[in-house]
Image (cartoon, rainbow, N blue to C red; front, side, top):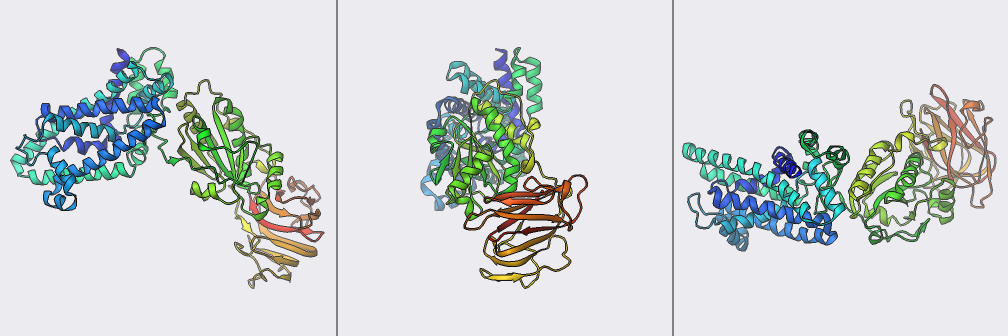
Length: 589
């Protein structure tokens, strides 16, 4: 009984949340009618429909989602017809005669006519409103729906959902009674009845449009986040049964249900998981499909093995997988190549092995999966719930603890229990994978191939796709670079034709990386690095020694400089002692 009262009060608080805004015009469109014959049936139909749909959605699986979507579509059409009759019967008749006929049966022709505003008509409008209402999931509703999803269908769940909807209907009833009196006063005092009716029509159309484009489950859920949470937490702490208050800490992150567009306030539905069928190969797993992933929480990590940003995020992705895979998490690395050599299956297989990746990796050489997500970034993380809905994304590095909290929230929604402690603070990355030093970095990613190259000197530029002898000026400005020796510069790389040859770059960053590869023959290429003309000593990266000596054996990213202590501007030179070296891109950290 106490729990039912608590949930009822939680429903009443929804009147304070922006998530209620889309249904207010539907309710106030009946404000001029007698409350017992019009307002009460409407609110009753809304409460009953919401309770029924939410019960099915929380326990019924994907079929309930589809059924609810059809109902919402019909309800949107019905409400649009009602709006047209409120705005202008003549215009409505011209635009949509059959729909207006239905709308005129559901909406009185004048404020004094009650013949067509019977209880059945109001009940139908209430059913439509219930199909369209998507309340934000605060702590109280989150707890109810999590329990429904875990325990399955039962009378107690339906009672609690109806109590929540009844609470919302009660607060709306108070607002409707007050609004009816206000409208009556305005009509008597100012003669504004016709303008009020048209204003309501505009509001109903705006609400239909907002729901149709998903603002009720997207924008409004985000601005609603926290609007009533503090009050709900106070209620839980004050009157909830023993043990419920402690559960509310995890329940806040629970889902509102699996009805269309339903999501927790901070994780609205962004779309459905696209097909993975476009992968050209799979590593560490047989091919995975959307159907096979149903019921699992999925992290999609778009990466490529020569991308420094991807490599720096990799320790966290691997940690998520190891920490939560036994709780139902699946991580899929979608390897989308930037350079041609990254399409080679053997190259990717070697990189996956050397990087210690044990979760499934899909090779997306044709960018089919990339296009399915409409992705534009390396790295990009998409977080998919157990129903196959994309609930969040993160582009680039950083905010790993926030991403892990999203994973935990989705796992809790799926029914996972006893999750391990959050991992981000304990994750340690070394070498190339260590986090970047963004404070002192003043040099940008720089491509060597002519298609994307910048800041190359001399200004005359490259002899495209032709061998040419290059020389470097004595003084370079910050972020300028040059070649010396005989090079053939192509779209995405430059290849040394005869040894020796070098690349010079004036940079400022803690780390300097260069994507390199041997020649077509695959023979190793020796190299020597200097910093301001001296050996790098303590500033050497993991792929060269303190004397600046290293060897290119495969196509990948090489860390050549990592400065200890203060970071200042330096002149970097890499000299290749053998022909065939291929240089692709500089990255800094």
